Image (tube, rainbow, N blue to C red):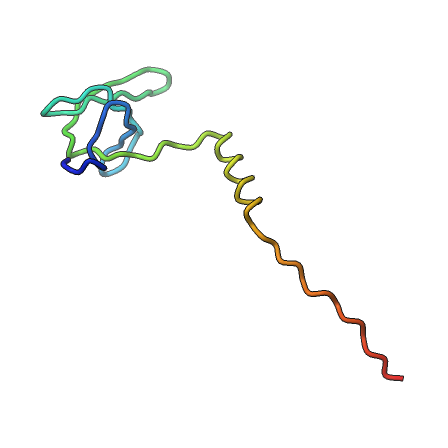
Length: 91
């Protein structure tokens, strides 16, 4: 990984290029990246080639989802329908 934007660093959340569980980078050396993840409360860790991993988007918490939803609703502009014109008298 040569680009600064894609270079992994300790603390990054990653997944395999093909998808899968989210993992956190805990150690990097010249040959591999060591990641940790949790399975049913048990921590697991393993080293992988950097080329097999990509930065992942951290999942939003419920609180973040609610706040984002509220913000979107506040930003939406609801157009009022035009006022109804009074019917013309045909007398």
